[in-house]
Each structure stands twice: as C-alpha cells, then as structure tokens.
Image (cartoon, rainbow, N blue to C red; front, side, top):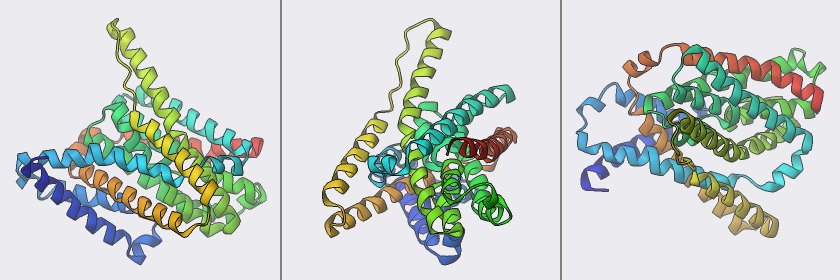
Length: 341
C-alpha cells in the first residue's frame, strides 16, 4: 500500500477499534452484537457523514480492508472448528444442517430471481441466511462479485432476523415448543436455523446448558458447509456464464475457502494431540482475536461504502426475500428436526 492507502486503512482501523470497544460494553454484549455488526454500523454512519470529505486517494486502504482482510479473517476463522465436532453432533444433525443449507440457498436464489432482485444481493442474502450470517455473506461476496452496498443490505437482513430469533426462540420454547421438541432436538433446531454464531450462543444459553452446547456444535458444523457451498456456487455460475456467452468461462475458485478447510484440519489435529494444553488454548485465543478483528475491519470498510442512497436503490425487495427465508427456517427447520432427529 502507498502512503495514501495507509491513511485510508488507518481510518478504518480506528473505527474498527471503536467497534471492538463498543461491542465489549455490557449493554451491547447483552444484545449479542459482535464487533462485526457494530463495525458495519459505524462504517455506515461514516459513509453518510464524513466519507464525502475523504480524499479519493485513500480508497485503496478501504478496499484493502474489504478484500484482503476479509479473506485472511475467514481463513483464520477455521481455527474455531474441528472435524471432531462433526462426529460429536451425530449424523442426523449433520443431515438436518445439509438440508437446511441446500434448500435455503436454492430457495433464496430462485425467489430472488422471481422478485427481480439483483443476483449478487440474492446470493449473499441467501448465503447469510443459510450458513453463518455476516461471515457467510462476506465469504460469498467474492463469488457473487457484489458491490459494498449490496453486501451491507445482505448483512442487514441477517442482523435483523438473527437478533429477532435470539429473543424469539427462548420465548417459544417456554411457551410450549418444549412439548414438541426435547432438549436435543431444540439444540439441533436452534443451531441449524439461527443466523449468526453469536445469535446461537445467546439463544442457547437462555434455554439451558444442554441446549447451548448442542446448538453451538450444530451451528459450527453448519459453518463448515461454507466451503462446499462456495465451491458449488462458483461452479454453477461459471457454467451459466459459459452457456450464455457460448464461450469457455474460467471458474472463479475461492482459494481462501480451501485454506479455510485446511485450517480446520490443522486445528482438528492440534486439539486431538494437545487438547487442554495451556499453550494451545492461548494460541487459539489469540488467533480468534486476530480473526475477529480482521473481519471487523472488513465489515467497517463495507459499511463505509454504504450510503442511504444505495439502500434506497436496493429497495425493500431484499428484505422481503430475507423474510421468506426466515419463515422457511422457522417452519421448515422445525419439521426437519421433528422428522429426522
């Protein structure tokens, strides 16, 4: 980066540090708003106030955060997962995860086309609903080739419905859902249908330790499905472009997804060999902090490119799409868990 890009990077870094601090406040933690969510909100405030006064030459640093930091953050996210988690959760829960992800993606992209929504927005909204919220939206962005405001719209839908679910699921469970789903089934239902990892943690803890544990494992298995989902979308879209242009189209391979999978394998090996070792626990904690901050940088940068005018351009249709997917997750997820688990 040149000196001007460094200045742009510094602006995003300062806002990201502010987001990190705000996300650590007890009132914000109670809402399960991660630094990623706070970062995009701060970025959007900046976009609609001071961004117009920022020199154009600084944009390189902003782009560095939204592209390079994004990929590095997702790669390091792999250290939060292990293949042992898949074994622990059981085959039935994995089947539920796979069906939820596949149907949500297919349904979302199909509905988006029917509604006349831009393909990029449909892909990212569907991926965020299907897999792991904001992190999945960011993972799908290179495949969809989405614009910053499209990414911000997709993330916004995840925040709205994920936050709603975090409060709604415990209420539903205590008002009678526990008569239809036992604790194991409720854990699978929560992990397989809620958007963000933070939302799963918040809802699970409100329903008891057993549900909290099961739901988090099911959710982390769902996060692993990000890699095959990205590869499948990349292959399908390249084939479609080839059919339209009648020319050979290069597949946009998300290489960072392969490295993400490799990091899961490394973490699985480390935890199998040195589980409980203090040096490993501390190292993984540091990696988690670095990964979260990188993703916060990316989200803040995306927010800083998202003005109210761009939200107006997107219109209400992406939120209608997210609502339809949310209804599917609530009802379809319940039916799947009741039949399979």
